[in-house]
Amino acid sequence: MKQAILPNARLSDKAMLTLGITVLEALYNNPFFVSPSPSLPTLQAAQNSYTTSLAKAAFGSSQDKARKGADKKALLNLLREMVRYVNRTATDVTMLYSCGFSISKDRKPMVLGTPVAKVVHGKNSGQLILSTSAVKGGIIYIHQYTTDPLAAMWSEITTSRATCKINNLVPGQMYSLRIVAIGTNGQVTISDVVTKMAV
Image 1 (cartoon, helix red, strand yellow):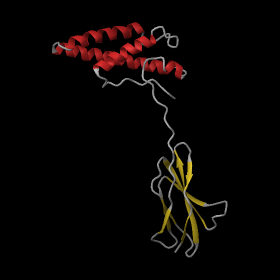
Image 2 (cartoon, one colour):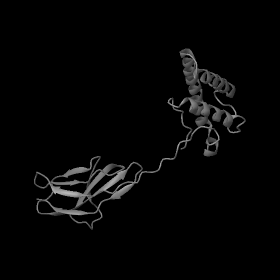
Image 3 (cartoon, helix red, strand yellow):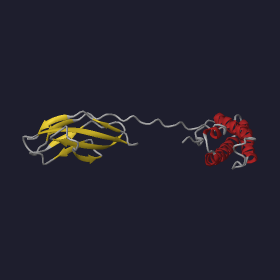
Image 4 (cartoon, helix red, strand yellow):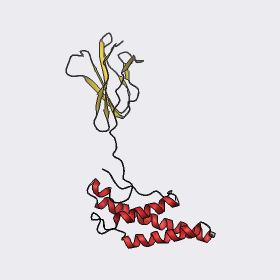
């Protein structure tokens, strides 16, 4: 879900000043946010103090610059409180886009890559090693094998690793193998079938 974004402490002086003005203008008489917290007069007072101290700090003393820094921090804290209020209050994107803050972008669902199965003989008799390069977006790998690729059921080993040792196979028997990748949102991709004789 979209949300108003907390302002960054690294905002430039000018950007902070502009953000304060933008938010005050957006929330004044805004029918979606009728009881802002902090109150708009409180935010306006902090904005005024920062505007004044910012102007003095441009050609002022070290004390003036310290005052500006303190006023900027105070304004930042109030704006962050306001973001939390907005996010608690807003029930749809129309409300969010009227608040004056930057709004987060919707995350695009990750496209799950497809595994490319490879199989080699293991060190032990009756052992095959089934593997793929790590699949983008994959969190679970199901390593499947069968002596009959047309059968409905495959034997399988589920792991978080892209490589799996399959043991206790029958030497001299041909096996069909494949890898199923599972993504973070339950997406599924399946490799092509590869064949190998156990030795």
